[in-house]
Image 1 (cartoon, rainbow, N blue to C red):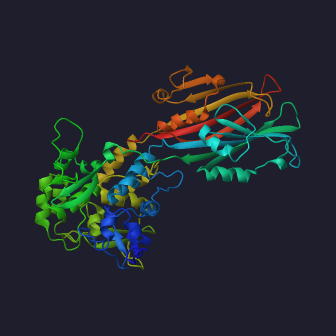
Image 2: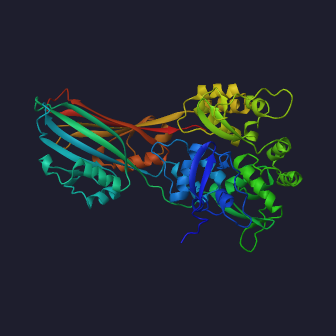
Length: 550
């Protein structure tokens, strides 16, 4: 039976967003930062987070993103909404909380190489009046053979077309073994999620009183599985003066010219030998164990996080010089006498945030430093407070999230597909954070997207008969087309081929995903053939997009 300590409820304030969970959830990964913060009575554990005015434990992190961190701790599974774009923020926060399994999962998921598509088509001929029953129709399910095989055990398919298309056909809709709702329910059960639908129709050339139509539904599934991490996310175990730590290689080498960067980097010819290993294969560093906690947290977050009334400044300075981290040495000097532990509650345009005073005053020339610093004679008046004693700043609330995260981590972390560059630049200019302004200027120049278009072009006779002539065409930049295994009538900007070999649509889409593209939209069109009235022309198009931002 779980102990009362493990099931104890804890209330958290993460960057102004409030959460409630159990101590057992927060300590599921004992060597993570949360595990060390909230392990009751664990020897060598970190001091728990300090509390705000409502007795909530305060963590100076990105509030909205913590939702995904916490859900991972609860379920040991990364659960994110379709179209999620905040990968950079999520990766940075996972690195801060030091949950190796989550770091690996994010690294794998964000590559976009683990998704499968399933397309359901309902193709029919019907009368022009709404009361008339459809006279002929087909259900088609298109996808990878292994996925279709799973459905075959539940849904009765009457025919197939290649490995990646299965067909259900009934002469009377009322006799269908499965309703549309049941079919979609079975698709959901095998892990697929609905993302888009499109319907098209055109006059039937053979029967003027009838029309041909097609309804299409696109489903997507994430197939992420555990896999060996790359070198950058490799987890290393350290023994620093008898105190044990766990960190990724990427974290320890974040500052390449530091002592740790030289010890643990696998690049270059001038890398020093890694430290010796103890009897438990931990790398041994002959330094002050308790102080290394602050060194490591600085490397993780580019921020010096210290307990209230911290006094071991000389020890911390000495260790920073030993590890040769110039940025940390400079920060220690500026923060030594500051009121770094004080929490401030902000209301920015109706959006609420909580941050350390030291975070808001990180850049001495900024407007926020002038507002909230307690040093100097030229400090401006702090902003007014609202009815709940939050400091009110009359600026754009949602954009302040990115400004605050920059103050916390000294890097610009934005969601995929970010477009509000002008607004972000204006806010950075108002707050007078020069490093942020420079970073925005560089990033927005490098922001660009690539597009791949897939077309399936065909001529048919009637919806129930096989198509008479058709071809595939992929259009995009040559550097992406060269990465596809598909060969055909090539040009520098497109590949086209006749479908004589019944090439797998699933295989084509899988290759497109593997080079970093994501499906953005799909559309179908059809019309009467100009040369022959008993035929019709059709085109299915899929648009894939890739963010090429550096």
